[in-house]
Image (cartoon, rainbow, N blue to C red; front, side, top):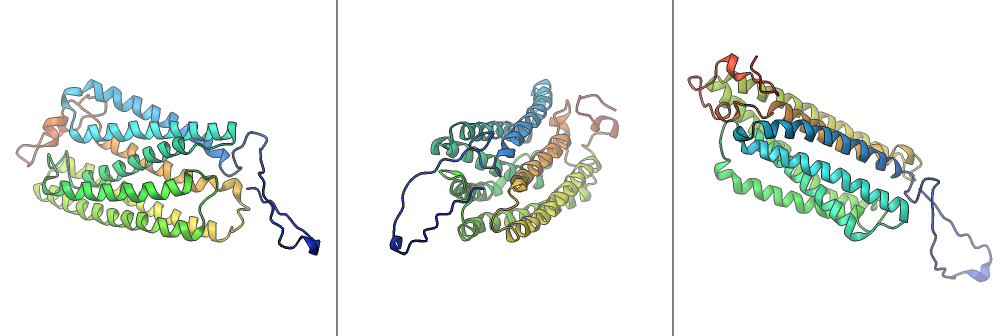
Length: 309
């Protein structure tokens, strides 16, 4: 963070207007100190997504004939996540080398990020509704899910474009609050909808005594609860961090605020990949509706390599 002050002590200079341009460069490049660590962070995140995609797509191709629509969606989110991390790195790297942040490039990065965030939330919502496991389609809820997805994308895109495109500074507190409110409201609404749907799905599985699926959904529910608790705790910390540092004096650790959300999103995606990994029994297992149709324990428990145990 750079602060530049011009002080004129001569009364004759009162009302003088100065215009010009200042160029600032740190030892490692043009990136501001609070942004510089994120460039390295995006490299590590890209590697993490690359490893996850290698594991996922190896199983994805191996059991191609048994892949579910849900698993297609998971593959799309992984691909977008990797693409987003690479684009963020390229945006920051270019900024660091040239001192300029092209509007078009940053807009593309922000748009890909907004699409990924939207699809991630819709994926979690769809899984909570039992899509691909309890029910083959979302039925009459499809239009509502698409509507909330489109609304969330617009709110997220506007917030991120205002914060990143054509600027290197965070937007002012009031503007950030104004633009962040719709995004926060939609997130809260989605969380409520997700847990309501998840509760209904768990009740349905419990009523039908489908033990294997019930165990998977309980693990998913626990992971989601941990993610929500961690999010609330981090938001509280973020508010405290910004409220107690009005002049950005703790700029060295400011990058962690942004990095946390990427790490949390990746961790939750890993959980989903683990619970709904492609296997040789995906199609038959997914749509078994009751105890009579369900696999016996030896057939139902298939690990990520497709071997029964």
